[in-house]
Amino acid sequence: MPDTVKARNARLEARVPSEQKDFFQHAATLAGQTLSEFVIESTQKAAAKVVQEHELIRLSREEQIAFVSTLLSPSEPGARLRQAAESYRRKSGL
Image (cartoon, rainbow, N blue to C red; front, side, top):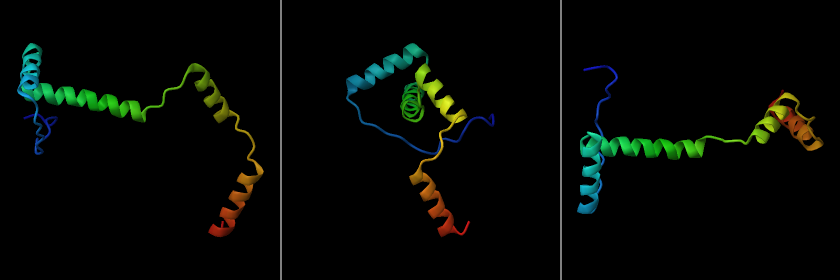
């Protein structure tokens, strides 16, 4: 057995109407997969999409330029930030 195959030691169950199960089975057959393979692959794709939508930041071209410009030429810290940094240094003994 290849090293890339991971042990399947967790179980996932779902109750669905029989019509829905039949529909999933039909789709799995058309895809040349077992029902389990089809459900796992479909769920993996859907989960990856949801995670990507929540964890990936998308910026317009203008936003990209503004972001990089700010990184390359940051503004000077304001008075409140300087005071907070000084307070932190005093309290932490730096």
